Length: 125
Image (cartoon, rainbow, N blue to C red; front, side, top):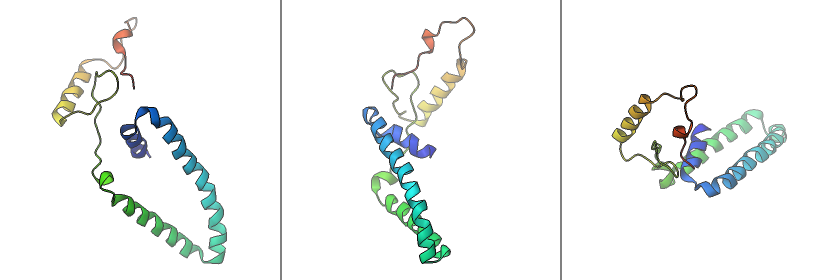
């Protein structure tokens, strides 16, 4: 689930993310009860083990079908760039990511008591 949400945030433009996330949630939550309602009659008509095996085989086959799409196989995680305004940009190299991680360690995770919060702004998404 975490990989799915991360991929959606990374690959979908921010102005479309809300709408596509709502369609994703609707499909997930609306179709789950349909599957549960169909499982009982199918298990009564056939056997429970055959319904479970068919469902498991469908999950495996559909997963491999998705992996046949070249864009899905070539998708890679984009590391966020620290200190960039206007959104997150991927690092060009792992060395850049390591340098950014070292830079983050130099600064405390939150400001000291009474310190100004203006220097602790986050990039706008």
